[in-house]
Amino acid sequence: MKVFLIGYMGSGKSTIGKELATVLDFSFLDLDDYIISKEGMSITELFKTKGEIYFRKIETAYLKEVLNFNKDYVIALGGGTPCYSGNIDLIAKSINTVSFYLKLALPALVKRLMPEKDSRPLISHLKTEEGVLEFIGKHLFERAHYYSKANHSILTDNKTKQEIIEQIVKHLV
Ligand code: S3P
Image 1 (cartoon, helix red, strand yellow):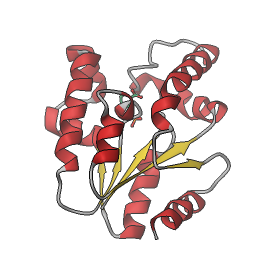
Image 2: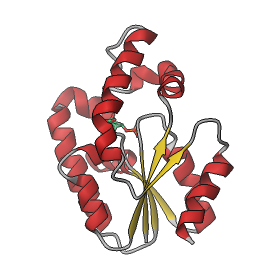
Image 3: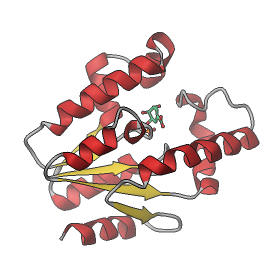
C-alpha cells in the first residue's frame, strides 16, 4: 500500500510522513528529496536553472516512477504535486493508494513559512509578511480544488504530531 500526504508547503508532510512510516513499518519517501537525488541539484537550483515548467514535468515523471514501486510506502508529495498534470487523479486511480490532505490554516502556514521562505522558490521573492499572507491566501484558494480530492482531510491546527498520526492511522485500519 502507498499512503500519500498532500498539502501546502509547511503543512508538515515530511515530518508527519517520517513518523507515520515508522508507526506503520512502511518505508518513507519525500518526492522533493527523490527529485533532488535524481537530478543532482536542489529544488531552488532546479527552478533557477531549468524553470518551473521543467520542474513540473519531472515531478510528474518521478511520481509515476514512485507509483510503480512494489513496496509499502508513506510518500510526502511536494505542495504543488497534486495540482498539475492530473497527478491527483493518477494517484486516485492507482491501486492500493490512499491520500491524506494535511490541512493547516493560513495564519499558521505563514508563521511557519516566513523564517524559511528564502529556500522556497515560489515565495522567496516576497518581501513582507503581508505579501506572503496575500500570496499564500490566493494560492491556497486556487489549490483547494486539488487538495480536496484527497481521500481524507486532516485538520492539523493545534494538534500534536501524535494526534495527527493517530487520526491518519484510524482511517487505515
Ligand atoms: C512546491 C512545494 C515544494 C517544492 C517546490 C514547489 C509548491 O515542496 O516541491 O518548491 O508548488 O508548492 P514542499 O511542499 O515539500 O515544500
